Image (cartoon, rainbow, N blue to C red; front, side):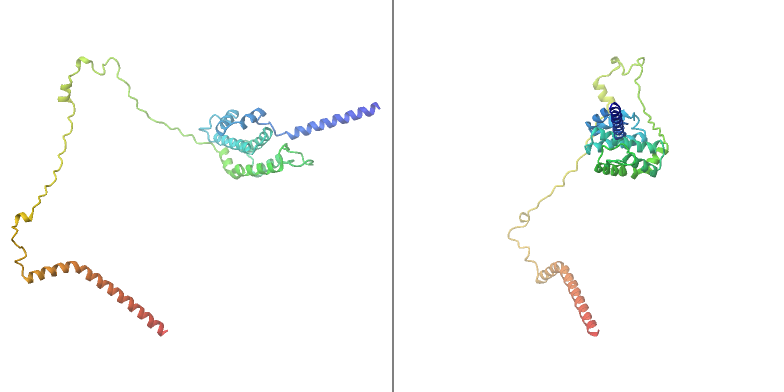
Length: 295
């Protein structure tokens, strides 16, 4: 009986050991890059403070001048904020950040091609949603299938879609530009030369205004309005004089003809033009009727 008990105890120990190994595999990619405290703190921050915190964690102090550090910081901030919007837990955020960090490091340090990096991503995603798998798990079992699809879509759109751009950025050095500005600074005159002059060399206000100050500009003369003289004809001519008494019938006829010519001359030309246009339209219609009849 003692032998049987020992064997059962050894079996139990083996099972416990296997369970610990499985637990280690389940959390293999969790808390590798970001600790639990860092994940908890990042999920509670806004976008600006989150960027500052990531800058401190990864020591990206030159992100304002270094293009590589600025791109890395932007990539990490976007990934953490996306995980926060998807309501990831601390463990899920840490595992997801391990994915995006490793993929970016594969481009930066290992210079992997897109195919090689896709294979690495596939290895990390193995085992999600599968209870018993022959293939070793990638260590992300705390995600479900829907979350795995969302992660795949995010990584494809944020990293693999711009893979050539990241390769170019990490394989070329940034050109340094030195920008200089010349600034002219006026220095005050030394104390041995009095400036401004002492008061005993001053002059009175009347002397300054009379001989030194610039005189004010003389006012420009404004044009005078022309005076309109109104003449009352009734006051010039006597009341009993008729100005039309000296006109003959021919004079009246000539005046009427000139006025009528001025008033009706334009009207006559307009009527003539309209009649001519109407005539042309009628002729065109007649010609059209003749053509139809001939056909």
